[in-house]
View 1 (cartoon, rainbow, N blue to C red):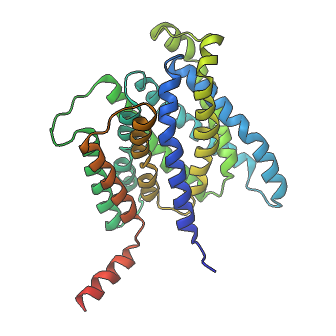
View 2 (cartoon, helix red, strand yellow):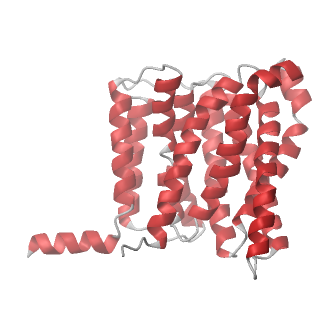
View 3 (cartoon, rainbow, N blue to C red):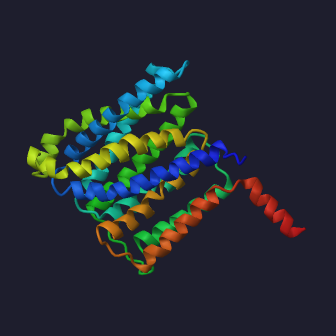
Amino acid sequence: MFKVSKSLRNSLILLLTAIIWGTSFVAQSAGMQYIGPFTFSVIRYILGGTVLIPVIIILRKKNSNPPDLKLSIKYGIGCGLILFAASNFQQMAMLKASAGKAGFITALYIILVPIIGIFLKKKTSPVIWVSVLLAVVGLYFLCIGRSGHLRLHVSDIQLLICALIFSFHILFIDKANEKGVDGVVVSSTQFFVAAVISAFFVYPMDGLYYNMMPDMGLIKSAFPALCYSGFMACGVAYTLQIIGQDGVNPTVASLILSLESVVSVISGFIILHQNMKSDEVIGCFIMFAAIILSQIPSDGIKDLIYKKKK
């Protein structure tokens, strides 16, 4: 019987995570037509955290020796602080940026994760660095293209900050998995923490700065988008990220998760009718090539080279 290795299984889980996140950019764009960024964050994170509570209860009852609850909550609080900052920079940017653009600029964390990892003494193989370089080329075609023109707006800078903070989120989750935490508890905790902190910014930011003070009518209009973003992109996808990153090199994980940029462009084209240029299509293919290469073990490539020489 064919057995799937833990590494491959978790890589596929991360791929599913990227697909859910990529399509959630469309939901975020749709929801932001009615409510402000911090209001959106509060509601979707409450939904995402709440839907996981029954899951936590069931799984911990079934497990005779569940992971330490206090340690999991502790790391969940840390994840929540990082998630609050990263996601709200992204939400603010999406008031102006398209779903596709938000997706691929956010995916710049694939470059930042291995760079930050060097300072944390994380080992990264040459194959992964080649994959990162390929991914950078793919992002170049998605963001700039053959015209060579790049125009940075405030929303682009916000997305770049978001990408930087998300790289720390990936590395922090990697550290949490090393400690053997309960992934679902970490996920639920981080959502409630991010929701509580975001709530303090609803009035000064959404109300005063953006002039988008929420009311029940507008929240009702945005509710379908909030449900998808809360239940799927938060409750399901962030939990899958924590589970999927277990035993997977954080740089490889970031490369797989960066596929959300490709999915966001495709879903934006299909659902929001945003046209894809030829350069964007090229960028998508290069990104896929980078992901596939990142999954080939270094020893496997050495064996291929050796056999060709013989």
